[in-house]
Length: 357
Image (tube, rainbow, N blue to C red; front, side):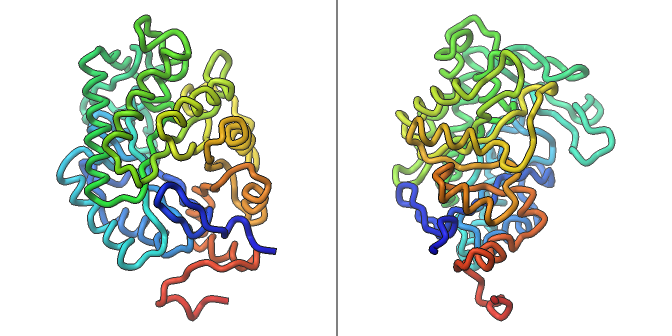
C-alpha cells in the first residue's frame, strides 16, 4: 500500500516531495540576529535529510522582537546576508524546500539563553531591552512589564513584519510562516489573558484578532502570489479564561479569507500556569478539527515521533503535513528510517547513496 506520509503535497506553486516537515526549533546561537556556522550545520543537515520542508527557527522581524540575544533575525542587511549561504546550500546540495518563520516575541522577549543556569529575564547589566505587548502585563512574576503598543508602535511592528517578508522574498525562501503561537506578540493580541485593551484592538474576539489579521494581510500583499504563506497558532492556551479551539476555528476561517495557505497547529505558551495534557500526538486533535471545520490545510505538531504514528495522522485526514522537532534533533535521518519502515522512497544525496537500504 502506498504511503500517505510520502505522497507529494502542493501549496500554491510549491511542490513538496512528502508531508514531513522539520519544525522551527530555536537554537539561540545567533550573533546580533545573524546566522552563524551553527545554523549552516543545523539547517544544512536537514536539507539532505529526506524531509519535504524545513522551516527556520522563530526569526525576529526587529531586534526588540527577539526572545533572547541569541535569536535569529531578519531586520537588517547583515541578517539578510548571513542567510544567503544557507539558502545557497539548500539549492546546491539539498532536496528539501526551505521556509522561514517570522516572529516577534512581545512581552516574552529580553530573555536569557535557555540553557543558562540563570534562565529568566535579562537584567540591565546583561543588556536587557524594553519589550512591547498589547497591554502592560508582565509574562510572569519577576518579569518587567512591557510597554503597551500605541498607534505608532502598532504601525512600526506591522512595517517590521512587511520588511522582513520583503527580505525573505529577496533571499528566495520558498515559504513564510507567521508565528502567532506560544505566547509571542501576535498570540498576545489574540488571548484575553494578555490583551486587556479597551480600544479597537481589545475586548471582543473580533477586536483581539484585528491586529494579527492586519499583519497577515499586509504581509500577503508583499509576499509573492505564487508562494505559500502560513500561520502557526496555539489552538488553546490550556488555561481558564484563555484562547480556545472555538476561537481558533474563527481565526483560521478569517485567515483563510485573506489567503492563508495552511495552519501550523500547536498550543500553549502564553502563561506559565497552563495545564497541558502532554502525551503522544496530544495536539493532533486540534489540527483535525481545524482542517475539517474550515477546509484550511493543516500541519500537526506535538510529540509526533514514530513513522506509523505520522502515517496514521496523514492517511486518516487529521493533517496534511506533520512537523517534527525533538524527534528530528534526536534522529536527523528520521525521514530515511520512516521510508524504510513504511516501504516508501525518500531522497538521498548522491554522496550518501551507498548507505541506502
